[in-house]
Length: 245
Image (cartoon, rainbow, N blue to C red; front, side, top):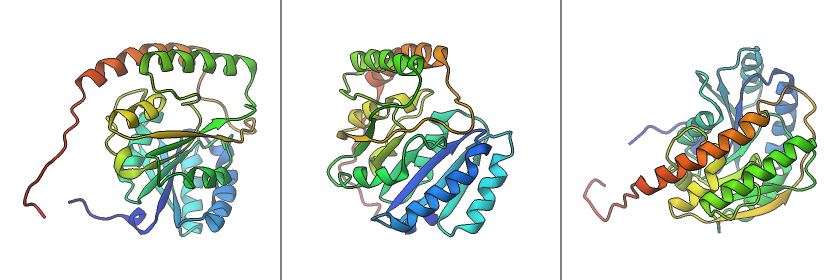
């Protein structure tokens, strides 16, 4: 049995994966700190630094020193899926959430998702009135349509960076590159259920987007084939008994 870490003291851990988001560090501290004070459940924030090289990780560590409910993990650069998987694996609270470091979604909208978290293993946002440019919105629409056709997950906006999951279910998700695009499909694969709820969306005001037209279309196209290959070979092991406890 693994030793408990500080997230075990909370009901809800908010994961914030970040890579070179120095310009957003102050806003992250302010907005997430304010949200924790009014969150309807006992919550903490776990920043997952994915090998940043712009000095933003130092600012996050300073923020964690100022806030008793902020924590951090440092990784070698692995990509968003790896950062999410590392955060989920480290989490020991009953619920685990996810928000992007660009703060294009609002932490307050976690309340909408938390209200349904007892009934669904994954509650995720749909970006209402999306504030991205035409190319980004169009490429996401194409990628979402292709993914739905290949996975049959029925999810409108899997890329929305606002999610709440039951930790026990989230930790069953297998690890693979591009996993962040398939969280709903993976939750369903391991026996969970999903619900989408409209949330607010804002334009990016600081930092630089990490995705472009190529990795927003080509990556999802190729990854869908990988996901289908993995699903056919996934082992859903369910223990029926034993005397270990």
